[in-house]
Amino acid sequence: MNIPLAERLRPKSLDDYIGQKHLVGPDGVVRRMIESGRIASFILWGPPGVGKTTLARIIANTVNVPYYTLSAVNSGVKDVRDVLDKCKRDAASMFTTGRPVLFIDEIHRFNKAQQDSLLGAVESGIVTLIGATTENPSFEVIRPLLSRAQVYTLRPLEGEELDELLARAIEKDDVLRAHGVEVEQTTALFRFGGGDARKLLNILDLLEQSTPRGEKIVINDRVITDRLQENPAAYDKGGEMHYDIISAFIKSIRGSDPDAAVYWLARMIEGGEEPEFIARRLLILAAEDVGLANPNALLLANATFDAIHKIGWPEGRIPLAECAVYLALSPKSNSAYKAIDAALAEVRESGDLPVPLHLRNAPTKLMKEMGYGRDYKYAHDYPGNFVVQQYMPDSLGHRAFWTPCDNPAEVRSAQLQNQRWRQEEK
Image 1 (tube, one colour):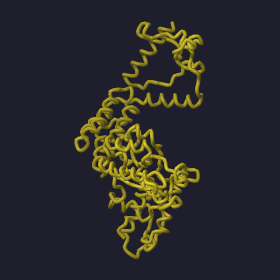
Image 2 (cartoon, rainbow, N blue to C red):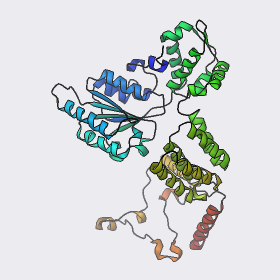
Image 3 (tube, one colour):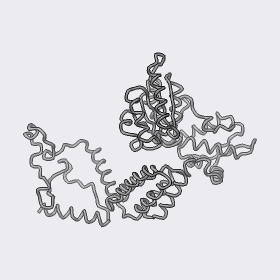
Image 4 (cartoon, helix red, strand yellow):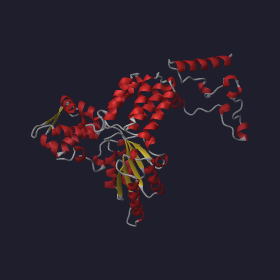
């Protein structure tokens, strides 16, 4: 049988759908929409193999409205306009029971012009949009479109869900049943699957294809590891061990090893990784791990992200390598990262503390009479553009959230700050 196992087992109803209980469980928002037949525009965001396309197909099978699909990989602006014209005719038809639904797979691959071409139809209610993306919609989907569509996050499959998927494959699939399957261990199978249902089923496909007819398929850690070492591409079409590779890349830069950084970068490039994904990780790392030790790192990482959008592959490998090496060689600091997390923890603990009166905005006469803004000291009126006054809520005093790391830039800044406060307090 030439149809892949993942396709043979693709669920056709919510009752057969595995995972994402927060969306399709008894009280899940997507389940409620499907059962009511009233679908609002939304975007499904999650890693590969967690059920985004399957969920869209279940909607198509369940909801009694015209349903259209596009893949952003091979659709241009003309294709979008053609399908929107069909949706417009459907929406105007007296025979249509509801608004047409348009599913766009890998919507993050649409450029701004293509996304703009969707906006009018979504805004005017001609079509209900369902998008699927593996990339953060905040970066890849234009803001006007995002404001008109909810974003629902899908999660990798975990323990019980993977057990259920494996059991269903063994029980339901005729090809596997013809062999017989003996499950001894699942640790390696689930580890290599990485929470990706499609990847896990591809591994089972590989085991079946490499097992002589009439012989039982044995699943244990040794068999799984041996078979995948012989044919690693069989289970990961987007680059071997996607999340492990990016983890090694980030940790090599954090550990100041430029050679390891460019090696793992090369592995991602050869594995077919999206350049925007790599550039975005560099941008995060520049703020999180280099931070105030070298603020120029964030500027270079942002420029790299822009450059990738302008030049793409293969030339994009050059600014990516430049940025990776620069970040690896930069001094490191996570003080800003720790400071904002400490401040967020305080806000969650103490709630909405009132702003001191002297710091409040006073645009009206009444507010001024109430003391808003009174006794505020304008820093530029003082020597060195600095003056001591209370900036925190009353109950926090002068709480310290930022602690400088041991690098020249932050040490100098901290020393200057301490010197200013001591001089003012005398």
